[in-house]
Length: 99
Image (cartoon, rainbow, N blue to C red; front, side, top):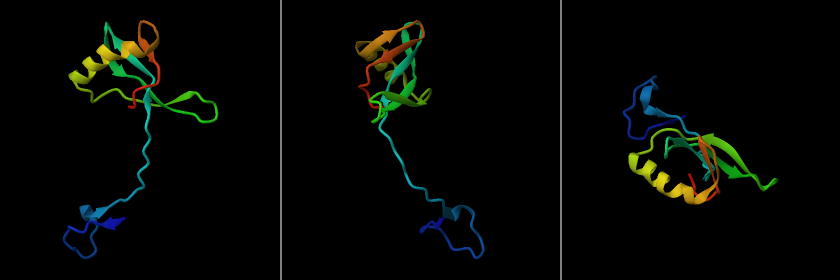
């Protein structure tokens, strides 16, 4: 915990003038597949990272919201060129796009 340097001193109080400090860990993940809604890409499905021991990509999470209509249209237009296989619900991608 650390006191926000811009806050006003209040004896014996913590409140919102204290900040919790945590280490930031980030990963660069690749899009491994996308879900489909009719003919359009509806959502990004699994994101993953390369396992250095096996040489295979491992799913670490999923992204489902927060994408704009423009992003969804770009995915629909672009991701088919990177598809490795497709079923009626999911298009699996060659790892190329950092998510």
